Amino acid sequence: MLFDSPRAFRAMPQRSVVIFGMSGVGKTRIATFLREERWFHYSVDYRIGTRYMGEHIVDNFKTEAMKSPLLRELLMSDSIYIASNITFDNLSPLSTYLGRPGDPGRGGIPFEEYVRRQRQHREAEIAAMHDTGHFIARAKRVYGYDHFLCDTSGSLCEVVEPDDAQDPVMSALAGHSAILYIREEEDHTEELARRFDRDPKPMYYNEGFLRDVWADYLRETGDAPDAVDPDAFIRRAYRRLLSWRGPRYRAMAARWGYTATMAEIAAVRDEADFLELMGVVIARR
Image 1 (cartoon, rainbow, N blue to C red):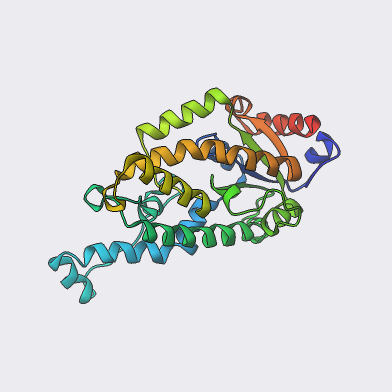
Image 2 (image 1 turned 30 degrees about the vertical axis):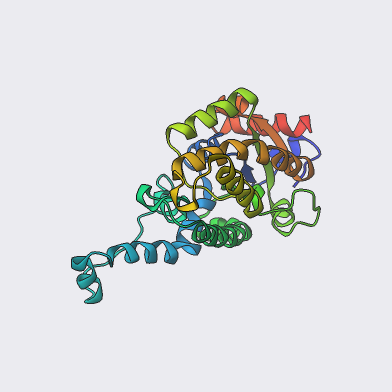
């Protein structure tokens, strides 16, 4: 939804905003305090990890448990129950399932298995994004929420075609929500990279991009696929990802929405600040 003026956005009796950008730019922080001010918080990562990837995650837990004779016996006799305790604030079960390619002795999994799980995530993310309209209606009908915030995965730009005006995911979102891109700036990009270096996490990547980075890494290091240091590889992939995703995000914002900087988002402290910022970005477009 593109608005003629900030006033038009404020006049909406039911506001719906979809925010996107790199992981770490402040999406979930905004969603958290808006949730406290009676906005419905739809976490796409949570939806992926529960509705669409939950069975895959639990099956992986069970596969590992079956390697233990004690746990195998208990599982086979239905004496224990294994479940994923994924929450908005703890997405570790999803990250652990996605894994990292490389040396199994250092926690890695075979590259083609990694790609298979990445494809599962892609299908799950597209489905979760298409669920947004359903949750807007459900939030109002069931819980009485007037306002709605969709907190997207950092990989949204990987499951859409930014240059396609008819992209089914973005077209659907633009039909019912204002779309806000939180843009990382150069100094922030370096901080995101440093933060990832300190605590590398499994992520979803465009498959073509992923295969290129993997082939380049093997060629440059001379490592065999099953000897790759998983953390070293995903650190390399993440740094290339920052420059890969930026143009895709910007194309999405130019076609379907608005742009705020990380600095502007960092200055937002409450609902009033957020509404004021939305007015600024609408006027700026």
